[in-house]
Image (cartoon, rainbow, N blue to C red; front, side, top):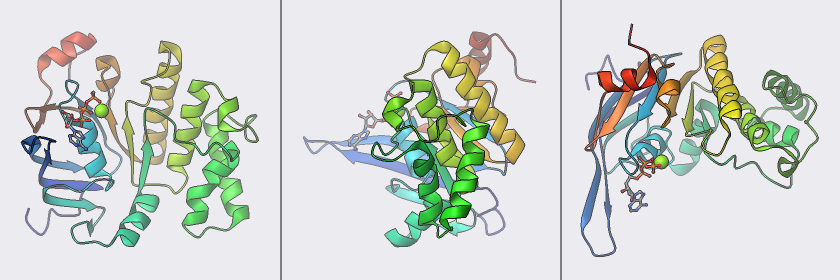
Length: 245
Ligand SMILES: Nc1ncnc2c1ncn2[C@@H]1O[C@H](COP(=O)(O)OP(=O)(O)OP(=O)(O)O)[C@@H](O)[C@H]1O
Ligand SMILES: [Mg+2]
């Protein structure tokens, strides 16, 4: 990628490849050359069959996993060769993750869970608590701040996870089937929240989903197919009952 393009996206991937060596010594090539530039505030949906490599790609884009080959930038920071400490700091400050399971810390209150990434980033406890309350208000949990994660419904747990993901005002939210365990109403509410917050705060979002109706709410729908990331075809929009503009 030429000098003037690198780091222009909030997340930039160039020729990312990922292969795994199986138990029998054979090589499984999951990603065979993915290029992606996600711009500030842009929403991108990633679809694809089960096992196609969506989670693998999302983990690489967020610096949770390293590609076998290729380059990755978060903001203008190139990840190659970066030590684990520095990488951890960039992940904490620049990326907000929401997974299928909430991964909230069970021994802490919801408020403390949302304060945690801020405290790690060096924020004062008072500031962190203020921001956490504000975010928990935005996701409709102002009356659940002292609850433990186990005392919340599934939809509430995921909304708390969204608040935590946003705590450090990340450049990008990365969500991997965040409503995978929710009923349709809770799923709808969660996605309204994700798209609403992304639009209001200018936070980019990369959303992995199996739900075409949700996918087409994004600025772009991309599909992992045979190791490549391609623009989703017309069929996706037909399935969702809407057409690209
Ligand atoms: N750590 C690993 N070691 C070996 N193979 C792996 C590993 N992680 C994933 N794979 C393989 O890579 C492929 C892609 O997995 P991935 O989890 O990215 O798929 P996915 O598109 O997210 O699927 P789903 O929709 O079911 O979540 C799968 O065939 C999987 O078996
Ligand atoms: Mg997956």
